[in-house]
Image (cartoon, rainbow, N blue to C red; front, side, top):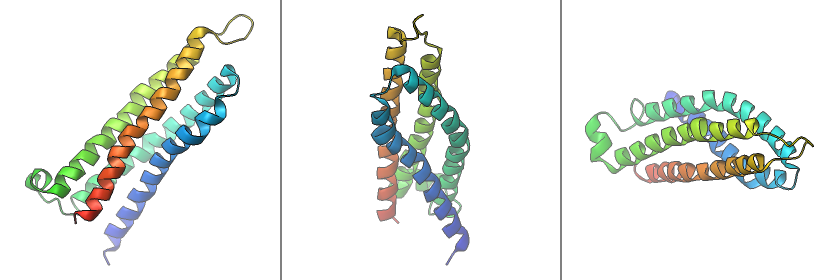
Length: 165
């Protein structure tokens, strides 16, 4: 058994579970759990969660992507550019690679931007939520759920690559 390849694959899968699992939990459990709470509490929880998640995924996702490159190239079947564009494995690997980068950037730019706008939205003088705060909170929920599209592309690519070896 190639223990280096095993270790790289094991860590790659673990990091993928952390990243994709987080997105599923947020969309399926956290957001629905927060919806009945007052909007100001939703903002507080969302802000805290977003800060912690950003710190974690700024390490997890680049490590995951680097391991994916290593698994596909140095420890995998892609030995030259021709293998990327000339084999079904290579094309699927490239789709997964691009989707991972786009999904990561979606989180860093779109989701974090939405969180910042939500956190900056004003509150009424009586402490209730403004229309702007309600709108920005709804936007955060939408862009977080839309991130799942990227994960579906990545996940499907991973399954396809398993059949293509």
